[in-house]
Amino acid sequence: MQQPRPPYWFAICGIAQRPARRAAKYEGLIPIEMDLDAIKRLLEMIGQLRGSLDGFDVVVSDTEGIGPDASEADMVAAGATWITRRVPVGATASDVRDLIKRTVRR
Image: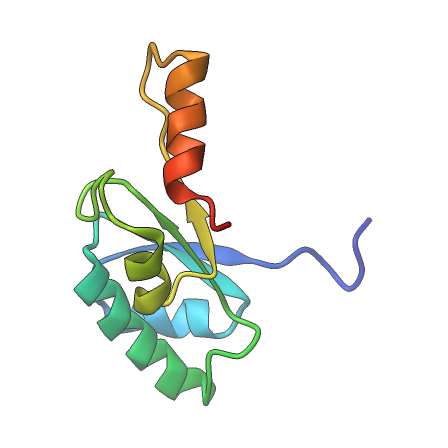
């Protein structure tokens, strides 16, 4: 078992103070159905609650609100420390390689 314990990441939909306060007490969050500007505003709030965002993870995905064409740089600028990408149903191995080539820093 991981000690002291695994990190807790909370999903948050929108900018609401109560969920932000809850997430600020732990190690990270997963914003859902939010665009990059809303994520930035949410992280400003959480940064104020915590005193900083040091040690706080933010998982950003190319889901609704952000879209599959969002660049890695834009996601990082919004505060992402982790980025996930969706692979469409029916994607071929070539499609997956192309997705990796588009998003992986060299």
